[in-house]
Structures are given as structure tokens and as C-alpha cells.
Length: 126
Image (spheres, rainbow, N blue to C red):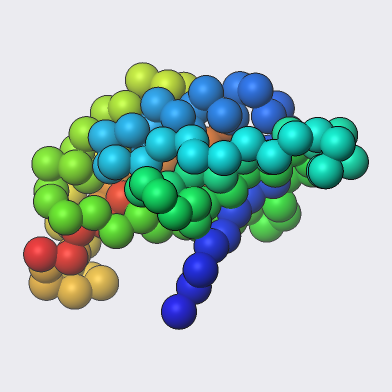
């Protein structure tokens, strides 16, 4: 079982705002920001459904190759809302909301790229 994951971002403030807005429709919020005296000066914060953080962003050189992170949600509506919010927050389309039967018959997902090019997805499994 995965406890948490994350991505490195080039512009911490921009990415923090992006993720605060993009993840809001799926019930995620920023739950923790680590003081810079503990991180060597880098911005680091964690997002999740309260009370648990499970997705982190860290200021630094973005991961290469880019990372793919998929957030499981409980409805197609949340997939659609995630996509709209992420695009409005500055993400780029990487796959509009819709069925992906090549994964399985009930797979419904949407993909965006974040400001650093990471492939971020919301998925409903039906």
C-alpha cells in the first residue's frame, strides 16, 4: 500500500496555488507546509483529504522523466470538476474527461499536465 508520493516543482509558489485549486474539487486541500528551516530552504507542502497528507510538492529540479500521479475519486462528476479546475488553474489538457475502455470497461478519467509537465489524473472506476 502506498502511503504518500509527490513531485518536484520548479516554481513552488505557482505550483502550490495550482494544486490548491486543481485538487479542491476532489476534496483535497493543503494540510501541511514544512518550515524552510527543516527543508534546507526549499518550499515543501502536503495535500490530502483531512486529516492525512498523501501528495507532496517539493521545490527543486522537476522530476525527469515527468511523473504520473492518478487520484481516485468517487464519481464521474468529480473527474469533470477536477479537469475544469486544473485547466482554469493553468494546467494543460492531456486527455479530456471520458471513458477509457482500453484500461477497463468502467474506467473514466481525465489527464492534465501541471506547470512542470507532470501528468496528473483523476479517475473513477465505476
